Amino acid sequence: VGLRDIVVASFDKFDRGREEMWQRLEQRIARQDSGQAKVDRKLAELNGVVRHLSDEAQLQIRRSDAADARFREMRQHLEEAVQRRCAQMESQQQETSSRCRTQAAATEDTQRRLS
Image (tube, rainbow, N blue to C red; front, side, top):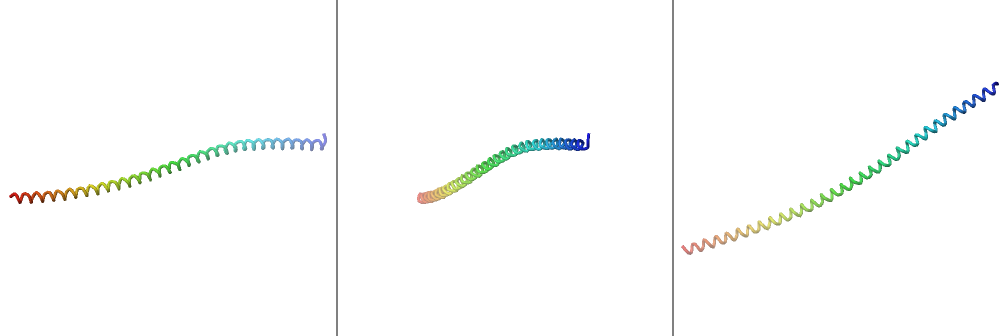
């Protein structure tokens, strides 16, 4: 066994070690890539869920705003109707009061004439 054989054996051993190291490194990278793909899929799924929830929240906000607008409009119409009705009732009350005074005055005149 000569020096040349020892050097060749050392290079062969070094090459095998280097090849094993590269294989282990490639396996690690493959596992990392696989794990990264799973994380990417999960992240995409979560992004979809968040987008859906955001859309739902916006829809609920629009529905709530529309209901509030309808409520305000209905309240305004109701207040206007109540005000008109109160004005009508006040007018009728004044008219009735005036008739009663007129009738009372006429009754008093009739009583004075008869006395």
